[in-house]
Length: 286
Image (cartoon, rainbow, N blue to C red):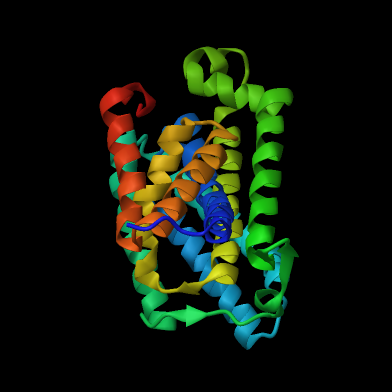
């Protein structure tokens, strides 16, 4: 093991921040759904990669700007998320049952993506990919910078809604004690649909960021499950800012590990944190 140069180490840390921001953005909707709706929505990953493929299709074939595809993707993912919540709410599924249901949905969406776009990896070639900023000896690719800005902006906006608005207070009250919240006139059904749709819309934004940042394939979604779960549980269920902070911590740790040792050691970081949380703080998983 050899210690890398300070430039390489700094670039690795910067890359870890960008990757961690994507972990946090993808984990934000999952954590809110889990913490406030008591639904473990594995379909969240499928929605993100479906959004990535839709972005690729509209941009590579339809010649639409990747960021403009959000105008189509966000409403579509909102509708899919609200519809899936309607199914779980209709049958009053427990968190474990919702895990099984959404895992099945994940497999269905994967099959749909393979049927339409095949299992071959695809890479979105856009003008954003060629744009880089320079900060001294460090390089900041524009897609990664946009991911960081979107992740921070959305996380802060969700935090503000949960903290300062009546809707946010109603959602937190329903998560704490649903019967008492209903007795005070809170429309939990409407709020549940709104939150579930918003969580899936956030997954859609994360999908566009994934498409801009690298290649995509249907089976790739499964590689994100462990690290995003670790970010969600480390950051706290139902937290708006926690997954982002935890994601950046994990991303930087992985990047430094790869720079100092080898890439094969990187998964050790996230899974070690995940196991430690499950063993030392089981109360985080409700």
